[in-house]
Length: 219
Image (cartoon, rainbow, N blue to C red; front, side, top):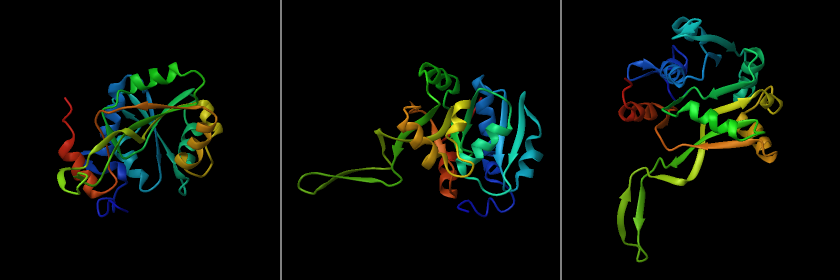
């Protein structure tokens, strides 16, 4: 809804970022990683447009589609894709609105070092959407910081490494952020992967413009 009218005739993943669909940027990122051999799109709204664009293969990566007849939430969507998809022991899940240069191979390696973890979550520094006004003890304004990052405050970066075991925590309908991860955290089954490199999300037209002006062209 926040990306209308761009999404009136296409799913969010086909919105163009610097002339190419958002999902294509993600698929290229996965292809470069060397750890992804198949992708399942968890999709619903106008999903046929994704199939028309990518078909069953992209640069040697197999493509399939897990279609929701009605919204299942992020947790339900991932569970459906994992249970109905290839019989793999380990998956990477990524929100469809993320653009990043995160080294997936390194994230997977870090996850494997945390024995017994059911999942690892990318975390990135919190960046304020607002400018910060700096004042001194006398309430005199001493400067400004436009949209500062807070390196000691982390947020969910929307990329996850999931073991097959994670399906035990995933709801049939519900959100991974509100239901799955709190339960995993209580059980000590959730690791973090802090990353301070390039990372953006596209949730509004304003976000889209910011990504387009910030991201570096790929070779």
